Amino acid sequence: MPTLPLSINDKTYRIACEEGQEEHLERLGQYLDHRCRQLVGSVGHVSETLMLVMVALLIADELSDISGELHELRSALGAQGTADGPSAREQAEERVAQAIEGLAHRIEGIADTLDAS
Image (spheres, rainbow, N blue to C red):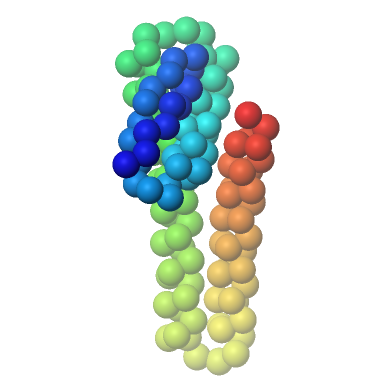
């Protein structure tokens, strides 16, 4: 099982991962490090434990937003199957397209953040 050194907030942690998951784990570590640096930039230095809890809450908030968008997308797909007439279907397809576009923009933003670090 490979072990990777991840640098988060200027501390190095050795983290084990499944074979073939090294690149994914490294990207996650870079994202976590970026969020820690953003937090330190906005609130200043706090204890490591508090900082990691705050970052976990920020990431959980992002996940909650994405989960809500996914729920809306699934609802729109469900409405598409039960709606009568082409105009209701077109409306559902438009909502689905908008939800997918919103998710794509968020994913691109995260990828850009990782590329910049």
